[in-house]
Length: 71
Length: 504
Image (cartoon, rainbow over all chains, first blue to last red; front, side, top):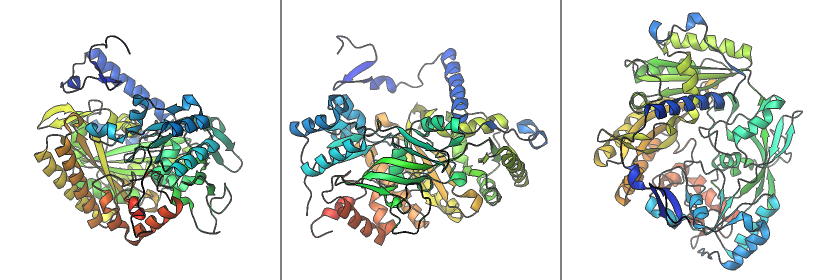
């Protein structure tokens, strides 16, 4: 066990966890960089998982898919 | 008889070390506490009370047999634990004892591309299994929302629902046979008749289903032979927006009756779900405010079949007044079926954004009863939200079973945000009361308490005998016959009743 725990970490019966007091702060601060990274990583993850399911994803035929602007 | 249990003493731990070795016997507080966790909410203040006394990680059937025989001989509770991603309590001890953490039993034993089966040690993750199968041009299509993290043996224990079940069937359909260690330590092969790779037999009782969805109360699966399918050449997902719930609800029928064998699922999101996604999921792709419900469909199969299905599905969407939401939203939101609820992790309490986890309550309901259940579940949830600041309503969805057959019933879920840091004994009691009320609605609608997760938790398990009637009495008799000392996951599904004086 370390002599001193990092800020924001508590020892709960030998089990390290984030200080629950920090979890009650809302909204939690996140920089634009962090938000962008989270969204980018999520999309990358979604595409990665989805590649496990089929060789390709078919697009709709152009005439069937006017999209939100043309719908 | 009344069952009493022994604590895990030094001698029992020493025997477990003899079976598995020191490295695979866990007695540390961290190692035990983490094996009391499941994703379903529970009061953290009770966490330590529900930890096992020891956890073991066997690697072979022989080791599992030895552990089970030890527990049966010493009258120690034993709880099988797979990925622990289930939304019931199957993997959590109610009486302490030994947790058998099976995750090291994850070997692929045989890939048979002649008879189209794969035989495994079942604690392998589906995503990893499919990575092994891909070079052979085949796959195992079980697709729960927990696909990236859950494992096959847990799916066997819950008898779970597959999001592609309309196309490829559910766990009950795709597990052909199993090797199971019974609570007395006997090893039995269960399947269709005696053949491990036989899909349909009329010899004897069909016992396989008894070991699908038992929540760890009847044994531990140590091998499984699974169905293989050709890996899909193509998929086509499409999301359509409707200007009311009623319009989306009506559109479900033409989609479900499209007679497309490649149709994997048809899902309806209600107005509360759409509002929640707009409000609290920053990653959700915005769509017009006028849209109040969404119908999602997806098809899988050969390229030619899926292309034909695509054209018909797009035509049905247009004919029912649906607004196609675009290729990007359709593809990504379909892909996010595996992580939709992991993303926001916040909800609203008295209109403030707060950190929340969530729980989804599920039921199996027929199409005609969906509006009734939707109305009642929202009324109940909103009443509890008004009284307790720890709850939020994240909306409902309706997911058809056997869509292409046209008559499938529906997995119905309501997602309740829960501010777990504020979950005290009073709000925990409110939560179980809420569950009980919505469970009663499912039964009033002629449905089943659970289409997917199981029904072992407080607030729903009390109503299992009411749903099952005489089948529950048969469950008690089977449990006592197979597990005479009630060591296998005791305290689940009210099965302790089988051992009360004068019973059995």
